Length: 318
Image (cartoon, rainbow, N blue to C red; front, side):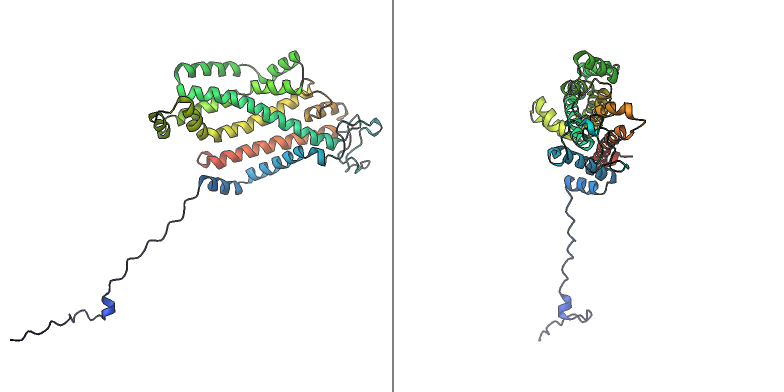
C-alpha cells in the first residue's frame, strides 16, 4: 500500500508569502522629558510681567554699570549760571542738558544715571544682609523646631513690634546719615520676612524622602541644611529678596528725603527729590524725574519677583 503525501490545507487559500507572520508593530518613541531649566525658560519667555520687569531692570543695571561712559556730564560739576534749566521738551530746554539741571547747575541726566548705582547698591546690599540673617534664623527654626523655633518666633515677634521707619530714623539720627549707615540699618531691620518664609518652607521640606535619606546616610546637620534643604526653598527666597530689595530702595529714598540717608553731594534719587521740593510748584520736573525713575525701578523689581514666583512654582500661582 502506497502512502499518499499530505497535501497543504486548501481551506486557507493563502499564498505562501501571506503565511509569514507580520512583524509586531513597534511603539512610537516617547518624547524626551524636558529639564526643569528648559521648562522654566519656556515659562519665562511666555510671561509678560517677567519679561517687562527683567528688561527694565536690565536696562537700569546696564546704565549703572556704564555710567562713566554714557553720562554726558560730571554729576558733581556745579555751574550756578546754568541752574534750573528745564528739560529739552520745554520751550527753554537745551539738548546740552536733556533732562535739565538742578539748583546748583548740575546735569540732571548724569545725576540720574549715577543715582541708579546708589539705589541698586543699597537695595542689593540690604537684601543680602537681611537675607543672611533671616534665612539662617528661619531654616534653624523650621528644621529643629521645639525650643529653637520658640526662640526664633519670639525674636521675630519682637522685631515686628518695632516700626521700621521710626527705628531707621532714630538710628540714622543717632549715628549720622551716610551710605554705609543706611545699608547697615536697613540690612538689620528687614530680615523678618526672610525668617518667616524660610521657616514655613523648611517645615514643608524637612519631612521629604530626600531629607530622610540624607539623615540615614549619616550626613551632618550643616550639610543637610545647606545641600538638601536650602536649594529646595531657594525660589521662595528669591521672591522675598526682590520684595525686600524694592522695600530697601524706597526706605533709602525716604531717609534721604528727610536728610538722614545718603548725604550730598552723592546723587541719590531720594536726595534729588528733597533738593527739588522747594521748586515743585514752579519747576515740577525737578521732583517728577527722580520720582518717576524711583517708581520704574521699584515696579521692575516687583514684576521680576512676581514673574520668578510664577516660573519656579506655577502650581501655586493665582
